[in-house]
Amino acid sequence: MFFGQGAGSHATASAVMGDVLEVARRIQSGEKPQQGNTYSDKLPFTNTDDLVTRAYIRFTVEDRPGVLAAMSAVFADHGVSVYSVIQRGKNEQDAAEVAYVTHSTREGDLRAVLEDIAKLDHILAGAAPTLIRVIK
Image 1 (cartoon, one colour):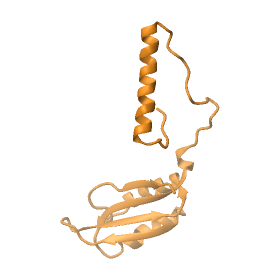
Image 2 (image 1 turned 45 degrees about the vertical axis):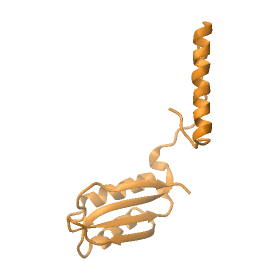
Image 3 (image 1 turned 90 degrees about the vertical axis):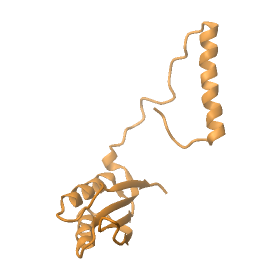
Image 4 (image 1 turned 120 degrees about the vertical axis):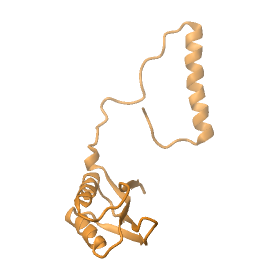
């Protein structure tokens, strides 16, 4: 699979249909299928742990004193700098929503933060955290 920024819905649809029609034309004319690809085997692969991005992370947590402090300590322990944090009060399950946006940091460090927060007693409530990479 190849992916990247698209040219837009109409331009992308036009390119896909052009490829489909080219394959159909080759089949109908008895030509051999075109072999090859649009990538280079020489492109380097990056370990996802080394990917550096900002991140948005949302947690559902118990709404009690000390939760933010315990979570902030985990971010600090892994060298992940927090750009902003927002807490929204209790929901129907007496839990709070806490959303962090980080400064640019390594993916491996973000995963370590999520793992360590999950190990803390009486912090997470409900669903697993949501992590979205923020590409600027």
